[in-house]
Length: 267
Image (tube, rainbow, N blue to C red):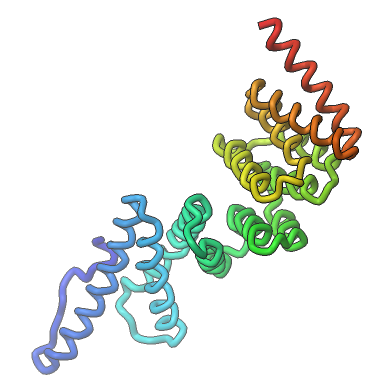
């Protein structure tokens, strides 16, 4: 607050009205910035983003015009990009999780703002890939975003790549990607987030029986949930046999079921 609020207001006696107006504007900008920070600290990323994004646009326009501005504006301008990226991603994720009416429109609004500031942001590319898939099942654009998000320090993008391969019917390729993915690093919440997402897709498209195999892989190799994995693989085997599809993957699923049975029996 010391850096953005004016330490004192010098109002020339000959121009009291103009001096007061400038001071009011300065205090108003500083107050909006501080209220945005307070909202962010209070875990209200949406309100924080609203305060900060409007300031970002105003101050950026003033600086681009080479206007004679209060020095604190430049400090605010330098602080805003990192805050807006965090707030935008948190807001987009909030709408993705809660899924209110027109939530996809809200998601892309925040992602567009993040892209303007940080076009190479890893999490933004992953979320945009999800957006393309959910909005109109545009797997081509979703894959493009995943390729942009590829990162050796985080394997989350590979979960998306494996899902898309399976969704398009290439379950053997998905199997290969998953095995690589499970050797990488992800945040603790990633496997559960992916499991929920796949479950939602299955509810909407029950004919995508190959996704049961994906759930089995995640529960067995990543989460270590043998009971859930057994149910997923069994469901996949039953549906795949009825459809006469995914023969190679059925054999893998049978091997995994046998291994799960052996582990649970020995315990």
